Length: 186
Ligand SMILES: Nc1nc2c(ncn2[C@@H]2O[C@H](COP(=O)(O)OP(=O)(O)OP(=O)(O)O)[C@@H](O)[C@H]2O)c(=O)[nH]1
Image 1: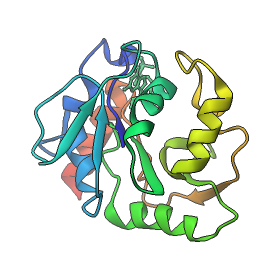
Image 2: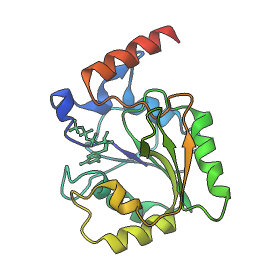
Image 3: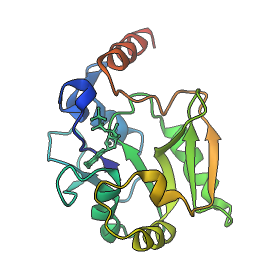
Image 4: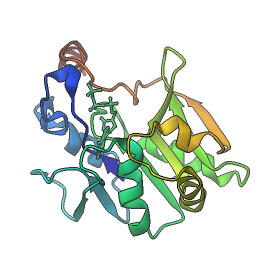
């Protein structure tokens, strides 16, 4: 599932998933990295996308944050594993997505997330066991406004290095300009 809401305050309230890198909306770039997904759940206001088969959901309350987005999507997930992705990851690639899912072949892991070049966990560039996330969400109580780290605190997570910058996200106009420059060079 992709979380495609949020205020985008650092981008002046711009509709982040619709911003383009290399001529394609960020949301389409994220969905293109998941060609094998059985379900495509996107939580946020409905937008135009090139990808067929997307199901749109809304978090409660609207703009309630990433944990509220997870809470909206989880009841709909039918697979035992799910990808949890932000909608602003221009360099997410199929190989990295497969690596995240493969890390869950280890039964001792509830989830696997990327760690960026600065050593920060990226819980929205990640794969989780659906059952583990459901248990964590039930234990958390009201999801609105809660940070993802609260949801994930009790989970056994694999932390994967991110040499391809697949977790590079576009929080600011500077990030977006850098992503566009990099996309041109690729
Ligand atoms: N569906 C949904 N996703 C959210 C929401 N808030 C955050 N997200 C997701 O979480 C990611 C990271 O969120 P933040 O960087 O904390 O917030 P943001 O709105 O993107 O940006 P800022 O307002 O500048 O902090 C976003 O790119 C979205 O993918 C929300 O209320 N609803």
